[in-house]
Amino acid sequence: MRLKKDKGFVLVLAMLIVVVVGTFAVAMLSMCNTNLQLAKNQHKANMAMSAALSGVEYGRFVCSTYESGLNTAGTISSSQKNAVWQGLRSFAHDHPCNGHCAHCRDGVKNSKIFEEFSIPAKSYGAENFTFTVSFTLYADDPNTIIMESTGSDGVVSKKITMSVKISKDNRILKYAIASKGRIWITSATTIDGDIFSTWDATRYGSAGIETTANVTNKGTLSTVNTIADMDSVNVQMETLDANGNPMFDINGNRVYSSNDTVQGYHDGIKYGQSSADLPGMSEDDYDTSSYKTMCSSNKIATSTEKTTEYFPHYDGNYSRSVSGSVSFSRNVYRNKAYTNVTLPKGRNALFVNCTFNGVTYIESTSNTASTSSCNNVRFDDCKFNGVIVTDVPKNGNNINWRQNSLYFTGGAIFENSWSEQEATILAPNFNVNLGNTTELEADQTSELTGAVVGGIVDIRGIVNIDGTIISMYDTKMYSSGYVTNIGSTDGDGGSEGGAFSGEEINISPSQAQILPQGLKSNIVVCPEVQTYKEN
Image 1 (spheres, rainbow, N blue to C red):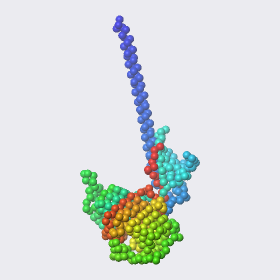
Image 2 (cartoon, helix red, strand yellow):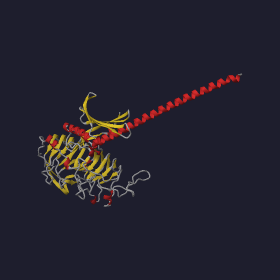
Image 3 (cartoon, helix red, strand yellow):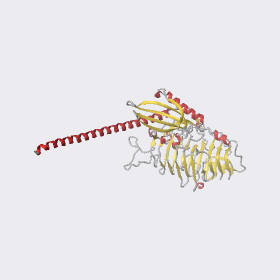
Image 4 (cartoon, rainbow, N blue to C red):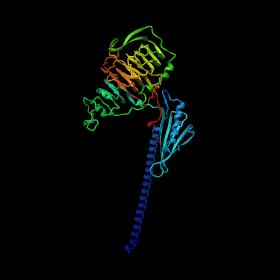
């Protein structure tokens, strides 16, 4: 009798198992569907982000290919900014890739007046996979365009924003040193940036850039010369393997040989680089007339005190000549303070313990050997609360580094509180010499901010430069000498003093600095990658 009763229990147990298993199966199916949907959503989000990133690259392409056709030596005016904005708008509308249909609108957004144009949705691979790019200019910030890229995959979208600046082409400010001539770097010199030389006269047996073993260059060295150019004259900048690649030992250290013209630490060498259209490397890139106008009514009078000096001179003795010296009858000025002044041509002045505020403008109207039309100026123990600017004497085939020269001796204190620290020295086609004598340089430190521009620039002594050195005179017609010297170098054909013991030079460029007023360059729209933001 008991067995018959147990038959019903087994059936109930079996049904219970079926229900449990079925419920589990449904739960598993539901979980799988949920995971599948999550995966699809994540995939769509990833695809939308990929589309948005593609839109950013497309927006950057539009900016990089747009040419404003505008050029300025000063700051960008409001009318020029508006012309750039309207030009970019028309360029985006008319560009074949955009299908002639960029959309435009204006109004008020977030309580701010704005103008905006957008490039319509572009298909990106699969159906419903698109991106759109918009450019917005707010009235309260006419220097900055906001680029927004929206990527979509169906109903899922991602946005990326980035600022685009309307600015002068300032590519040259990425370099610590940019020179049309040879560059020699010696002593305890540290460079936190790249170096570029466009000197291509390898026929003279030089690569254009030479550094000694105690130099530390935390950047790359770029040359227009190819490896083949240098091989043809048996010159090498670095030790290369059979495939033309730099050699390293088993510990990852660079291999040097005594034949390398580049010694000391560096981040690599770039050969065969183009120098086309790099602003600041030609005398035609400069127009300093706006500075001259500012100072034209305040000219420094002649001085009753005169002295005769030679340039170049015997080591530590300015009144003693050496081979190739030029004699100058200097107007001497002592313990004076000047604000926004012009030094007329031919004064060939000596300033001792003087302070200069605002703009100090140096005149020179000659590219000849005349000492009455040029200006060879020596500043001894002077302080500068502003910028030093010169005329732009056209060189032609004459370098005239003796006649047109700015020579800083003793302690030179630069505190550019007048401008936005865009430049300390703006002296196109002038010979600029900072720190050149042995006895007078001990324990003196020079601090410079912004660009240091000259025909040929020499830096010696204890110097810190927060900016870019630009030597813009082409010296390739000279077989020797006329070298941009960073540190003491004998035998360069143009040294104005002797070697200095205890040199320490530091150069740190910053592309965030503005290009100096007086240096002409194209107005460009440049995306700022550091402003990238995902929304």
